[in-house]
Length: 351
Image 1 (cartoon, rainbow, N blue to C red):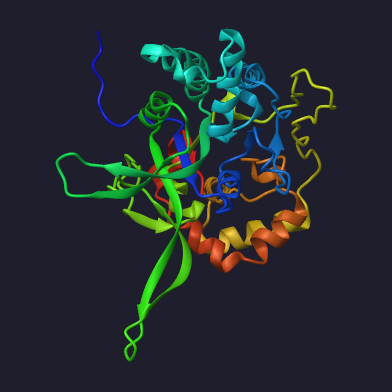
Image 2: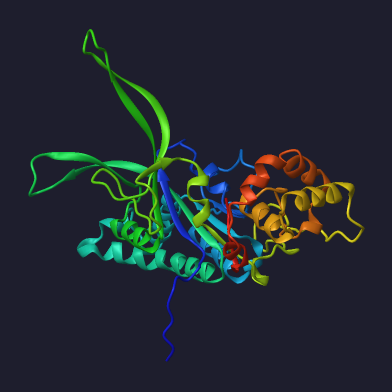
């Protein structure tokens, strides 16, 4: 038996919840090359890849299984949202057990049925994680009154908006990060009248446990950060292995609507363009190696919507001009911040 030490790089399990309209789906779309299982139609205005909209619980399981069996399809799977997925799960069990609400069954039997059924989805998600694909689960937030028997009074507390307490606990325990997004309001007091009024409404993200909300992380994040993907980008990993490269794959999930293919662009076979040559001159002038450039481009996740290339030769001339040459001063500074050891690792933290 071999005993090993050190950290183990892995794909990330992220739960993000918050009030309606704060931007959970948009935040999730910033993860590396995401594919959405959109349970409520919240991605209609986002330019993202998505599987056919699930109509019943079995559709969600089938689509999760597809990603588990085809890890080349994406770098991140997003389930948007957990509470709508749970509703479909409960509806299925209500029909099977001929009841209006399985959670009200005597002796908590209904809750056990819901947990067992939802665990099927978690099992697929675990397989997806093992294949090096990040999983993001979004959820709405609900405020509930928290009673403390040994304390005076009660207080309001934000939680995931799930019907089953057991499913809620299972999802929180499963995640590497539970992030709570909310609006931070500042109370201003008038010096003369002493009246108070709320101002601000800045979007923030809480990353650690607090009596008033659920949150956690294993990466030393500040308790409260801006609600911005850049705050967690260095933590998120994408592995450079054959399974994590986008190929010519069609989504084979039965649905009435035609499927949109997830495709890659062919490799460039012609000689390098003038933009490539100009970029190489800038790289030589400022001491940026090809490996460092490719790594920095990958972490920035800049490129076309359906393709993220790790290869300098495959960059489109227009992309090189607009995203690199025209912004070279800032990009060069960004590229130099990475250590040689970071670049030589087998995974890429997206930024």
